Length: 583
Image (cartoon, rainbow, N blue to C red; front, side, top):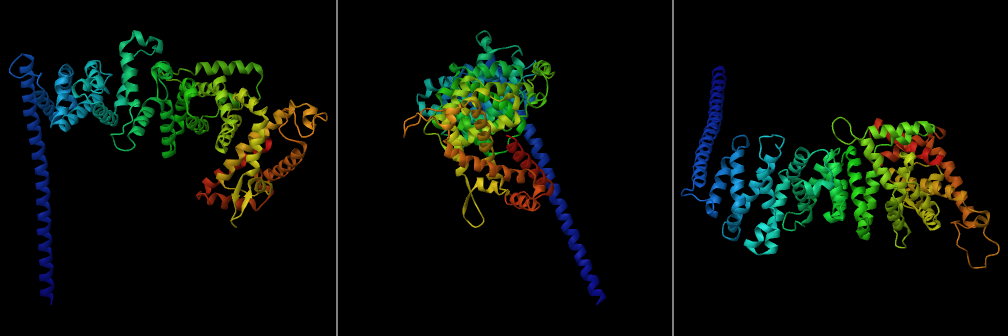
């Protein structure tokens, strides 16, 4: 029995050793094949590189190899793409670009023959390599002119149309080429070129005197004007996302702030503003963008909007309002708004001086405080005010428009108290139709209870019952805005307007600043009184012990589970109710 066990053990051990040897041998073969493959590739790279250099020397000396032949150009490009390494072959790439630019018509003829897919592949790969090369533009020894010219020539319709003479085919080619370049860092290359090759003092008015500035601006705009119908779904969104990420989502350099943004805001530039807004909103809803990017994006939206607001469609205006509401809530809380509330007039001058000194910090970028203040100033311009007012005053104004407008005004009043757009708020306060509509929205808002019945949110507030984050986010901005505007409008209403003029004809009502009749005011006052009592319970839960459990249940219903996270949410919600009660 022992001999049998020993034999089995010895057999198993031998099998294990054989298996280990086989595995070691297999691994050795894999490593050897990898090393041999690497050496063979290096050898082939060297052979092809030498062959490329031989052909290039023949072409330069006027020998038997001519670069005026499309097939020869294709052959050279194939070799270059095979062995290209940026640290070794950048000069070869520049030479190749020079010849392709010179013989562009001969090269693109391949797109009309059996080798069209090969030619398109080569063009895309070459332009991708040029994009990568241009990202080293801070190297003074690099000649950026030829790679830039290569990008310009082979993404232009004028290069292809005379040869191919098919507009739709040429458009399809350029869309595919541009889409590929964007994926390979096209906008990153342009951003680095603008900041390295243009002086920091450049302004848009200098564009005619600085040729490279004009070329760079045209290259920035070019990809934004195509539909990309020949590319995979979502290609156009990718183009706008890449442009936004590289140029608008980081603190502005002087070149971006003083040159690119004013250039895109010029009506002659024809920036696709409405398409940009749609793409921006789609990107915002699809992913959680960092809030520190909001001031820069918001500034661009407002600045370029000054030119294009008048040409937006009705749907475009609604998208614009959604973008305002989204980014305004992400702006840093105004330091001027919080620090100056209790200060005297002397400190206002100091704050103004501080804001001026924070415009250009030591790293050469515009400061976030300056951009935030500029955004709020732009919101208070006559054009912005008229655009927003026209949206809420039109007969077709939807509930979403009123809700978005209320959310915008609420954010301005709560987070930026010293920088509220006064013209906008005063205009809304003295518009009886807006106030009536606002109250109608507040009183008609309902929520579904556990029993399935629909209950007015005002009634839920009056009972002091906690509501979901979604419901409170719907009603608090509207309620806050209504209370603020209505109390402001009452100051300017004469007694005759308040009580109604007894001389007026029965059945008719004179034009009045008073948005409600006395009968409606009685009902409204009762609702506000009950709501105030309920808000006290919501703002100070300790006055009602069972509220904390109801709060926890409400937050769990929307996915908040951690205790610390829940405490923060409860405190934030309490703060919102306190703000509403104070107004």
